Image 1 (cartoon, helix red, strand yellow):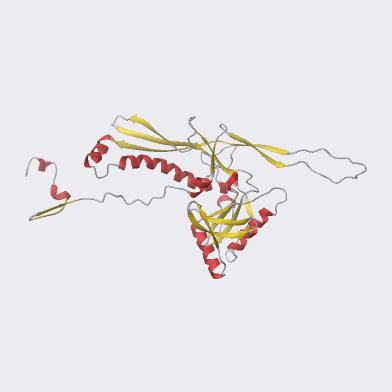
Image 2 (image 1 turned 180 degrees about the vertical axis):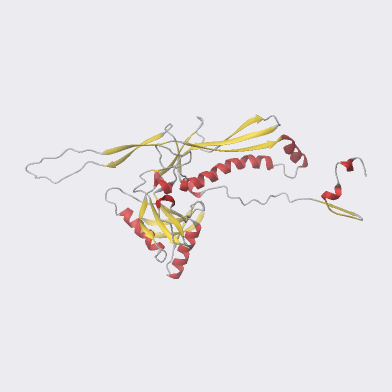
Length: 329
């Protein structure tokens, strides 16, 4: 055995050794990567610069009141609009990766996966987006203005339970249409929902129901993807499948637990222009997560940290949006 053989046993790394053949490990240049890195909801909800910490805005809940009067003895009663101050605290999301100088150098020298360093740094930004995509629905905080946790107050916690629940044997489509009709019939607020978000499995239940009942679902293009839509009293609304929309088997979000063998699915009827994500930036207006390199650690590891300061707000939560509970297996 040669001197080098004392440090490297080729037979342990070779796939085959034989006469006229030494077969060694090689890999495809492409890494199989189907990991989800985006959120449809984050693409459609408006990101706006925060006014501060907390982010503040006003909501008008009423206008002046009119009344009939005797035309020969006019006696009006003075009144005025009602405006309410709202506030929401900004939350922080972070992700970090440490890269060993030695391992990065070896990988670069081999050349085959030279771009993996940049990919791993980019993925910490993706990690923040995935956490946001999940938390916009089920973040566990219980108040926007008086935070009880460091997470978002998810939309399923902000939006009160709708007036419509769809039991195991009832029509999902009828339930959605009834909820939208109730919102459109509001004489106090001019509500015009724009989309219905739901879990893809619930979307499949709707497809099956439409097929069985011979209902023709319309189609719309959302974020470059063709999705089904239903005709409602507020017009045609797309059914946007979001894999981050949770399903539950307990009393989460204030709903009763379903029977054994069933789950609670949620269809969120949204007025999307009233859902905002205020963010804090460093003065450059960048609404995306930022990446910082913190220098080399004692072990010559490069430390990269991504951070994003923002939150999610459902304005007019009690009337511009609604949740339809659907119970299915």
